[in-house]
Image 1: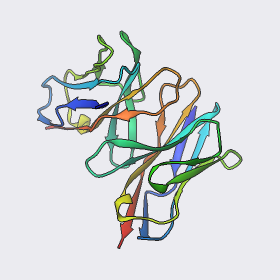
Image 2 (image 1 turned 60 degrees about the horizontal axis):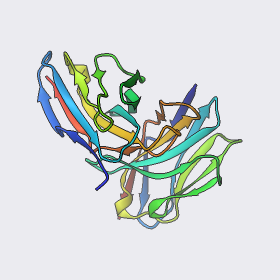
Image 3 (image 1 turned 90 degrees about the horizontal axis):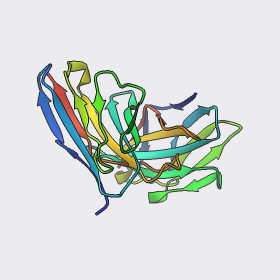
Length: 114
Length: 113
């Protein structure tokens, strides 16, 4: 089944404890992206990647890192999480660089930072 | 630069009545426009998209939207609401060559029996 998967789906952690949220897609998509969703603010893009080893900042990159070593994986890294990073996170992928195109979203990761 | 405004944070309708969710946009380029739906505790799913072909776009589940360049609008409609349509709806604009789509803040559709 074609899909975008994220792990974990739920995570509660404490301030300063490094964490990684994984994202994987099995559709051979070139473009991948991370968003955070907060009430009343919609989705805001954190980072995106146009292909392997190519990443760039979105609207709200502060406090986050990403890497794209393989086409299918695009992990989101919080090296020192803070409470203001408590949010719902979505990974998405797009088939090709002929943007704009349909985004395929993962199921979301709900992160709570205490 | 681009932006999108969803004019209503909440819309409440009765089952069987029409649905109208309003979206205005601005974009420096010829925009592509999307509507996504998010059901509770789920990811986002594409409803429909406009990418410079026909201005009236039909999507899944009976939804449609009309691109009106003169009004910079892309409102989402459905003739008859179902209970299963209760969800959060997002309008998204992406300019040609843009890798950072802009999401509206969302409209929560409430459907009463």
